[in-house]
Structure formats: structure tokens, C-alpha cells
Length: 239
Image (cartoon, rainbow, N blue to C red):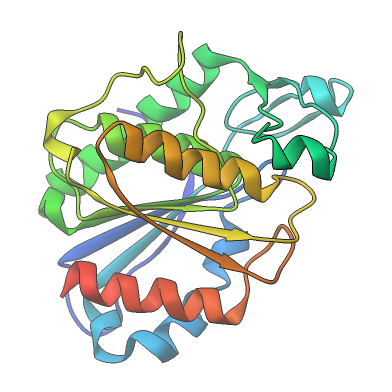
């Protein structure tokens, strides 16, 4: 079995009893969020001592919206509408991306393999969290919600929920119908407009999922108050 290359950070004081799989955004790598671990350690305290962090790297592929140049990506983005006007936003319009769905599903399968490996290592599925930023968040949504065993929780950071085949349809798993879903978004985000984050919330709620939406005064990034909120959520989910 082959797996995506990844940065792994094991707990320093004991064997892991929980795992966090965290996906990066377009053009980035697992290093981006691995750098947050020291800050998470400060806020998680003793709760940090039983968690294995896994930050996989996406493969480099040509990305259409970036002129076909190759870069780390979970899937190709074929088209990305221009920034919406305030009037369009007021009407509820969203700048949804057109993407290569086969590549998205292939990435979802790779994340399922990482989750399977954690089970083989002795981690219970209900002790596994899946997080994703931007493009990685789109994969995280589908990977967690389609996984056949119950997970501890799911978080989407500055991201969107891409539906497959037809609106509001995807290969969901009954096991994760009640999964705890956290959605974090910057209200100044010029890359993934917050309207897409809100649409993800609305779509998931319409499908019967329990979600919480939090917004922050930031652009396409993470901020300290958000990291504190994520830390508290990790403690609650894995306590």
C-alpha cells in the first residue's frame, strides 16, 4: 500500500490515542500547518500529549486557472469566476469553482487510505479529526462525510463544499451523519469569498448535518483567535 507523503508529528510523552489529519491549500504543502503545532501545543496543554498530527502533501499537477503551471494541488480548478459585486452577494450569488471531479474523488480516496492506516495503527475512528484549508477543505468535507466509519469531527477553514454530479448530492456515509462540523472563514477573504463558506454551511444544514459557522476579521489565512477556537474544539472532540 502506498500513501501520500506527509509530515507526521507524534506526541512527545506517550503513545498516540488520537490522530488529526490536516490538509493544506492550493500551491502549498503540509509544512504550512505543521508550523502551527507549537502554538497548538501551548493552548492544548496536556491534551496535546496523546495526538498524532498528520500533514499530507498533495502531488504537483497542472492547474488550469494558473495557466496550466504545475503546483501542489488536490485537484485541477478549471474555472474560477471573478470577484462578485456587493449587489450579487446581496442576492445570494456565489462564485463557485468548476473543478475536475475525478481528481477530487481520487484525493478523497487518498485521505481515506490515511484514515485506514490510523485504524491499523490502533487509533479508533472516533478519535480521528479531519481538517482542511481552502482546496484541502473541499477534500476534507468529502473525505470525512463519505468515510464508512464514524469520525470524531470535521473542520473546513476558508473553504467551500463542492457538490458532485448534481446539486446537493455526493456519496455520504450514514456513519458520519451526526459528525461535528466546524466552519471557519475570514470575512475579508479575497480568494474564497465568505459567501462560499456560508453556502457550505447552508448546503450541509439542508442535508441534515449539524454545523457551526465562525467568521473572523481576516483574509485568506488563519488568525490567533481562530487557532484558539480550533484548539478548544480539538480538546472537546478528543477529550
